[in-house]
Image (cartoon, rainbow, N blue to C red; front, side, top):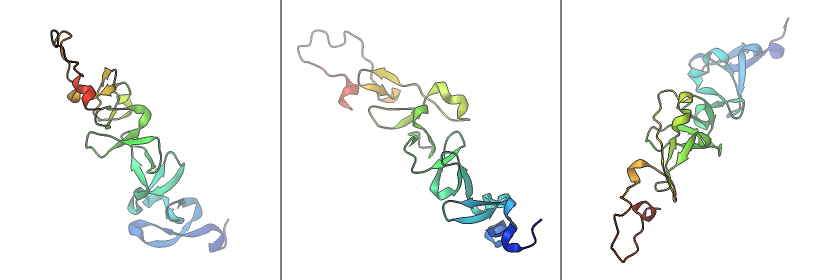
Length: 157
């Protein structure tokens, strides 16, 4: 049993960003600012559990993945999705268009990303290409021409 405030209580941010003494069992320490926060009011103070760091951080120091996990924004294993959603994903769950350099979710991992749009790439010698940037021509399309033609997708790389 604690008898002294200094031994069992910490000055922490709580509801509406106000500070008061809270029992240390009901607080977490935030890595972003080295402050303590009441566990019932983390949302009020924009504090999230950062999966890759296994610590609490401010939302401004993290990004929300399409899988609803928060990770630190400096993590080199995440990429911003190229579908203008503002969402992020693990680079292993995505493919990168060889033409645009944009990242898209793979269709085989879509169950892990609720409500997200996934897209299969077109496989070419130049790499994986977004279907909107790939032009498939019949095999004999240029037959009879003496010039060397480069497939359209290779011109954009």
